[in-house]
Image 1 (cartoon, helix red, strand yellow):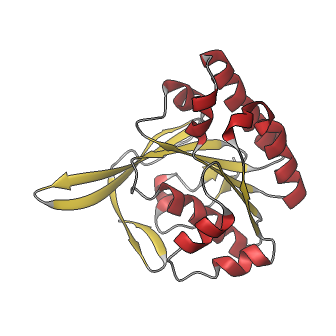
Image 2 (cartoon, helix red, strand yellow):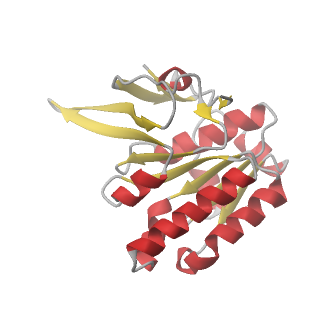
Length: 212
């Protein structure tokens, strides 16, 4: 099995060597857990190795995302060079999202894709059947084009449908104990793969996310 290395500090150790190529992983966490940062770093580390990336946002513009990046990365440079493409998409056009994602992946020859937050689509779809169908279509389009994908979701908004459709699940949690805050990460599911089942702390520093 080919694996796509995230190249995030110690993250691939948790994943058993990386994300299985062409699979779709759901990253869940509450606001402030760092889901978007993880997604951006996934693209950035890939771009540094010549793997083009696509970031699809249902909430933020390219300028919003670039301003939010506070790490010591040359992220803007990779965006300017076309190695990372950031696209804002309206979630109310959910029927068109799979085709639009396919077109963006082909246009940018992207091998890494991040969608943030995937749960925004649920707000505009009444039927659980249609939610599943839409997610499966996005997953299929990315896989058929050879892309490995991260779907980011707020923990309280994600449903069992996202859990079931995803090939893997990464949980990021903010834990408050004795007046202190710590962050914990673990792999809940990684279909067909051996992976680390333990809970690990993680931190952010000037160079990004580090699993401890």
